[in-house]
Length: 149
View 1: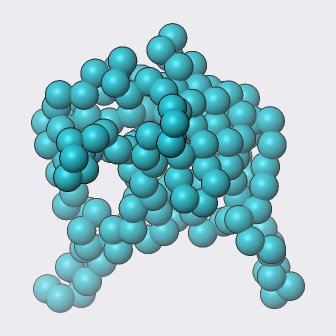
View 2: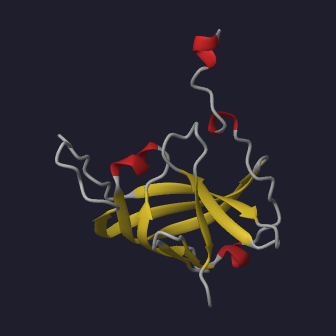
């Protein structure tokens, strides 16, 4: 039985944040991450992405995508999720230099989709996040409202 549950981590059982009160107007705006990522979610459902890393295991590939796309706010029993899709890639950057021992580096995707969970901090301010790396570990990539926006 232990072998069957050994890979079960927090992400496998993640049920969402429970946030159901966010509006599309509240989600629209400029978002940033401490790593220099910037995402602009426009009220018309379009998006501008700068240096956004992949989620889950894709994060390990080290690419950071920039371009344009679309977004929409969805909801399920566990809470609200921003579905962000890169539809036109304009730039690819690397989070860190590729090591000499790397035998094959996967080609970064030309389109990509993220699921950003909507949550609230201790001051009731909206924040967005997704899981990165091994999803069972539960590392979160947090986006907050851009300072001064």
